[in-house]
Image (cartoon, rainbow, N blue to C red; front, top):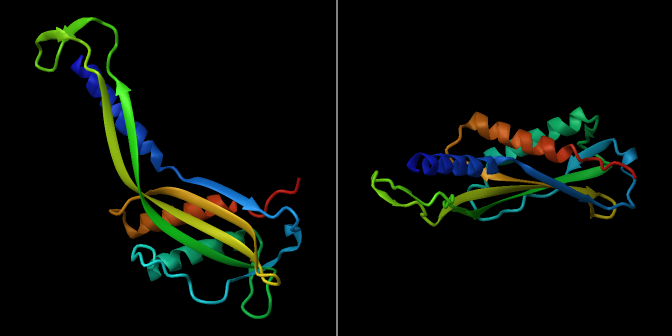
Length: 190
């Protein structure tokens, strides 16, 4: 019985680590014709300050901008440094503390059995609850119409943030998130 419970514990930890995938989504104004867009620029003005040093970080800012520029260039858009581009790009980032609680029933209906101390006893152990706390990072990319200054497309990504990661892994995580978000831009016409 102890082996089964240990196996279930390993499986539950594996299931929790599967939560590290990047979840993406997008929304847009269906009245906008995105097909004529060719040029972009970063929205004028300073980046919004959050007060969180994990977010208000020039290294993170550089990673995000570089990843967005790389993906938009790969899609055929040209960054425009003067004049009015077809669209502006901005980003927002946040980190929030999350909790994942999972309860597993450890009763298997075998009646009396052996417990952890290898003594015979009831096989029912009751439900086991596992609590996992983690930081979830969110990255939002906005596409804004420069003429109206209205939001016309928004993409977002959420994933677990690992503080102990290397600079290379941070680059890869940001690149993956931006790529996954911008796979949905421009929106497909109906």
